[in-house]
Image 1 (cartoon, rainbow, N blue to C red):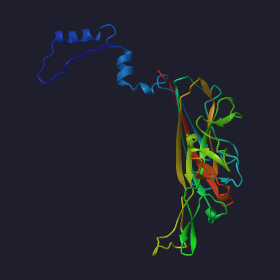
Image 2 (tube, one colour):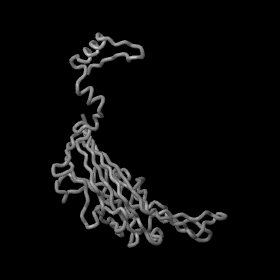
Image 3 (tube, rainbow, N blue to C red):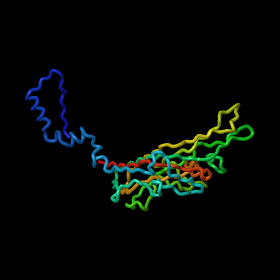
Image 4 (cartoon, rainbow, N blue to C red):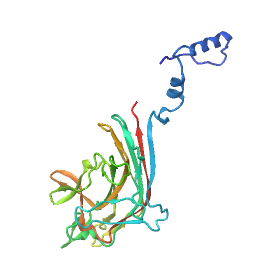
Length: 297
């Protein structure tokens, strides 16, 4: 495009008819200024225009709408590997996915899909599940002749993103999004996911357990247990497709209890069924999911 460069007006300058005619003539040159380079590329923000920057912008409420947490959805923890992930629902057993409609969102090479989600949740527990036999998160710290059993504090639930690229009705065809594991991969005697394969995962901590201050090098036998309580969690995932793909929907699933581990030099999150049980649940109400498709121009 052409560019017109003019010095600014200062106090005391006189403007004559000739000056004004000269200015108008400059602005009326062919290609100098038009609706595109004055409005679209300068005054207005082009990324807010439909068809320029965002070709799709969809949002949906996920979970059960309950601001007071009076009757949240409760998810049982897994007590045997590999377990089954829970689909975020409305409380009546009906999943609450984000839908792009029957036509879906068509992504071309170079486009960018961004997904954001949040959820109000509370990972509960009773007793001291980290002391269960075989619990991964159990640490025993020397305490005189015996030891104090405390949790590593790293036990957690995981929520991750799935998408549907095959079924416009969203009845079947759900799979993990690219870069995301289903947390059922086998690692020696454990199942879980490598951290490199958790690109669309939100981690939800459960408890904090510490021993009291040491006295003459001896830890107290009464650890401090702290509940995390209700909190708002969030996550984000983006994707640039290597080939054209149509996305019909997105949804969030959750499972627990998991714990960090290292197997064959790989950093993992693995299922800890020994910490699971009736008292360990994941409660949630509602949240939002938003998806935005950026069109490359």
